Length: 235
Image 1 (cartoon, rainbow, N blue to C red):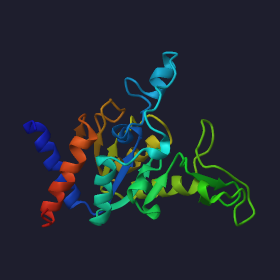
Image 2: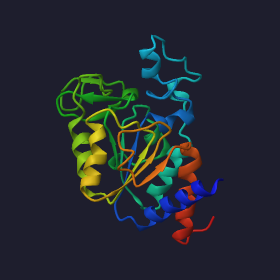
Image 3: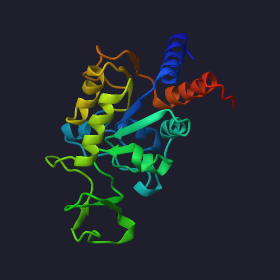
Image 4: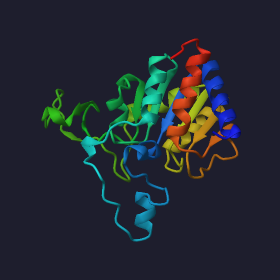
């Protein structure tokens, strides 16, 4: 490992150790190591669309895709009691599949495995086979299409926790889709440190206190391992 990367990982571990309110924000980039495409990478869905190309065919069915080292590192932070909240732009269900508690997660763009009630906003698993919510409202896909409003509960919680945090860690997002991209602004305005782990550039390069362009799987698991040592937990 190069010394500069090692030093940055050590810094991230110390910041997480010192943090009293740690919030993570994830985008499609965290799931590329599970075999899913991102959106704005060199071969991403939107990059290919802008070139007039179809999305690359997936190697696996969606439901066969498993959480990777990045997802599991965030899960480890939950187990350590360090993760206060997780905001995600992803619809792939991998955070819940990894074991993240639903009450610690806001899925801003919905979840492909869940239906949402148009009347009360409650979500239910598609596998339940329901067409109507217990309140009587119709159930529709929870995935948010372009132009549709984001789920009110998830959006409100995201803003609330972004304003409360002292450390805001962005993982695998280009931070260009609003209103999700407003969350780092809220965190910065509240005085939080901003960490970005993303291969591509973002609009927050100058505001970031710590920056990683390396692969998520090379950064997060090592930072969490060092955090555990700082906490006196040896593997």
